Amino acid sequence: MSKVFISYAHVEPDQQLAAKLSHFLEANGFEVFVDSKIRVGQDWVEQIDSQLRNSVYFVVLLSRASVKSDMVRREIAIAYKLRKAHQLAILPIRLGFEEELPYEVGAYLDLIQYVAWQPDEPFDPICRTILASMQKPSGTEAPLSFDPIRFNSSDLDHLKRELARYVGPVARVIVDRAAKKATNWEQLYNSLAAEIPAGDERKRFLAIRRP
Image (cartoon, rainbow, N blue to C red; front, side):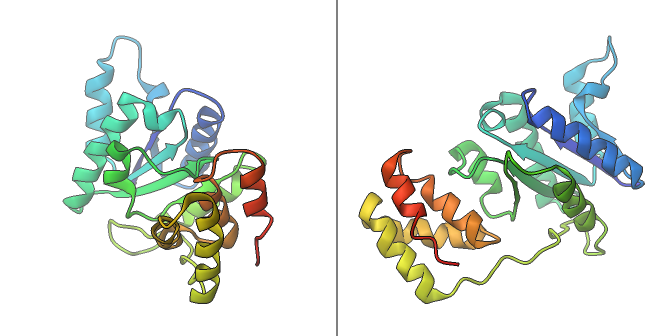
């Protein structure tokens, strides 16, 4: 039975998704560890370290709160080392968080494909996506169950020109980087919009959305 470690911050909706995903994966034959399973009297740091090193999959819920958590960052660092040793697959989920990751987190996760959940969406689709990824016979580095979209170069050039109105020449770099990670147009636009301060300018940028 494959073991899954779910890393998250103790805030909402992170806790709700962690609980939902844990129950969903267990119902489908996986052994899941979340820190709420640590019993009274156990050394929680030792337990977390042991459980993580014995897991096959590391699911990390990335939110504004979790990327600031020292414990989540520590778990990501350990998971990355295990991934480099081909002992574990990392499956990131962004929870309404499309901003650039802090350096300490991005250094480990920026090149790993993620899925995104938005606050107005149910949890079930994300749970099914993670399950499908784990069920693929692709070795320890299980790809997520979708392929990143191939964006048309002319559309990306249009985006670069539009974004440059708000952030300047760096727009070209920002768009190229975001296009490598986004899995659909909505995710790409939301990621780019996060580079613009909230307000009328961000709304004007989102209004030019094409597809």
